[in-house]
Every structure is written in structure tokens, then in C-alpha cells.
Image (cartoon, rainbow, N blue to C red):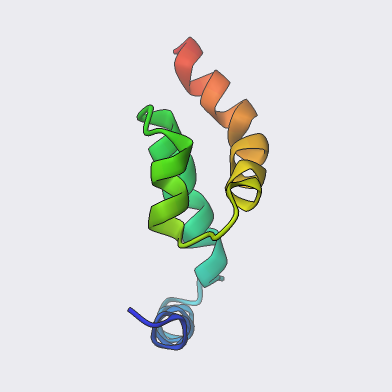
Length: 73
């Protein structure tokens, strides 16, 4: 799916539900869920389409607390 298509879909969802929905948050959620499932960072990089793994590491560092909390359950 092209980014513009997904962004249109996100705006439509927001308009129909009244829930603030940002397409980038969906990407972050997918990356976080993949981290929680133990999927290697290089595979997450490929799914997200990041050229540089440093970009993907930003997701990992912001999701780290969430992942640790999930692992403690």
C-alpha cells in the first residue's frame, strides 16, 4: 500500500469514528508488537522499509519500556 493511500484511509477512519488516528502511530504499534514477539530488528527494518537500521533502532528504544513491562507479566 502506498503511503498516500494509507494516510487517506487513516483520515477516513478518523472522520467516521471521531478517534484521532495517525498513520505513523500504526507503524509504531506494528514495530512494537513485532519487538514484543521477538522478531529481530533487521526483519522489522525490512517490514518498515527503513534504509538505515538506526532509524529502526529509534522505534526499539522508544518501545523498550513497553517491551520490558510486557515481558514482566
